[in-house]
Length: 554
Image 1 (tube, rainbow, N blue to C red):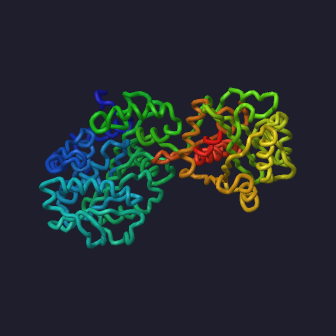
Image 2 (image 1 turned 90 degrees about the horizontal axis):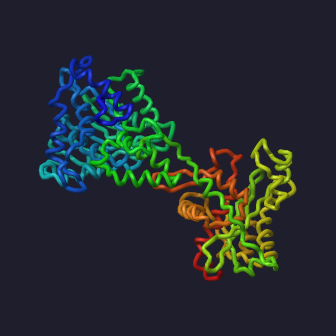
């Protein structure tokens, strides 16, 4: 790395610069023992096989680097220097497999009496990942399967991998585990620290190591979306050690990440966060993931965080300008002024209501036979009292020309300081009277529509065709992605409506680890209205739910 032959990030280079001078002359009361450094590596490659393929485990240089640094630095009595390790690298670089292998070594071959070894995470499913890998390794090993067994750990009254020869075990701990007291921890594999929102569990494990002479807590993690948590604290502390601002001889920081966010499109830099690239993690996967990130802004935060270890909050811009804006005009009305005369018979309504200052938005999606385009009529309502505060523009709040939009017929004001919910049904009736197009179904956000207002909607459309659209990822994630695809293909025509476009471009999304999205206002600011988009999405959800019936009637 120092010569440039191996590409590495700043933090790994700092680690090399810190450790290399110590090999020749030692460091304080510790020296490097090559036999102790290589012993766990030899154990793993001799006795362990990969659970997926059944092939013998062969450690990559980056895995050996971490293991030999952890185990090789000892004092005159042979006890390890490092008790705490932060190993941060991108996903799919064999973190869990390596951690599981170290855990088996710590149980069987570390020379500790009655070693209590724990796989720890915030959830049972996460903690069980590495535990499951360890169990498969044991079962596939001819030697270890004779020495170790799966059974009930007496101390914890739960399943574990038990070594009767030394009265040791491996088992799982989570925040939900009862009775976390009484621990006497020899080894802890703390999985996905970035997902831990409360540091109590980590601190409890550290305190439970105090009776051991050479305990070890190995935190393996990829960066995450949660900020100001345990991981951020540990990351900053680890960087302080590497920067020379903090002296902690018991902590070993090993951090693989990009040096700059701009490097994510440079193939030569990918290995900085992915030391197993090309051997453990495939190039094809990385190329496909980066290509998706270039085309899908909602996926980019996940890519940057999970494949390049760049910190992200969960919010990201959703629509590009080209996706949010379609300049194509609405179909020209015939002399009769009726959309029914050019093939439109039914539409799907969508409504997002407000309390006071927000916009209330109505949408009406229309389709016709043999035409894949969705044509959209829109209307917005705002309380007159709220509009007067800005002297026509409300610049102290939204900085948009509401009065001009009102003059163009895109926005309506209502007396007072609230918008009555009946305006939506009245607008649907206007569409029927003016354009001879009937409402087939309606989707609405039920948050502000209750009681008589909801009953009015149901009476207008029929109960079975009036859809309450809950505002969460489970309901909106997939329809939102599908609607975005419609935008990208220019399949939503709204007559170049500026309020629609403004609302769409104010949308941000939260992306979880399963790529589900939740919608937010840009930067979380009330001034960035998204009411028009949410009404649009409610209507689209209703369209999807009744698609077959609707298409049969258009």
